[in-house]
Image (cartoon, rainbow, N blue to C red; front, top):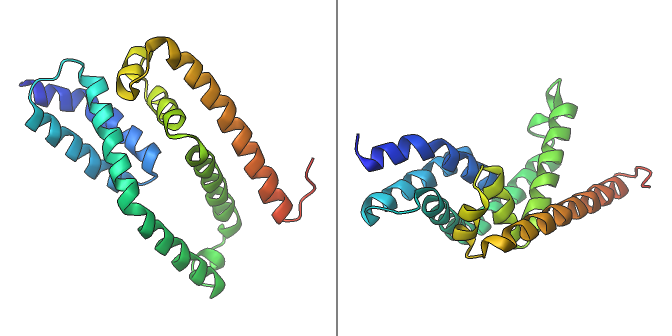
Length: 177
């Protein structure tokens, strides 16, 4: 088994999970993971494989974000139009639970997206199991600042999420504490 095949077997699933969490789209995550490993093939031997792969994956996410912003806006408008027309999930017996889950996912996604890029990437890389050295290499930080960055990012994520929850509750007319 050559190095690329071994690297693929070892890191494909974690890279796809990371990309799926970052993008919210499993199919797109698979595509970007393939591009990540294609770049590894073109690059040749890599010393710190895991950090290098996640750095490439992060850069691909940034590229995709630039391309995908317009598409997400179009999809949101389409969803709003369908909802206004009473189409889609409204007739489903589990529509209320489904709608609530979608709202919670959107809220969590919005909270993560509201973080600064470095904080968001640090949290997602740590969630994927990278150690402080690998996170530092992927984000261009010193190893000593990774813990501080993660701690700050967690606090900010919680603050943003709670604020979004309060805003949603206020919009829906719930009693907000």
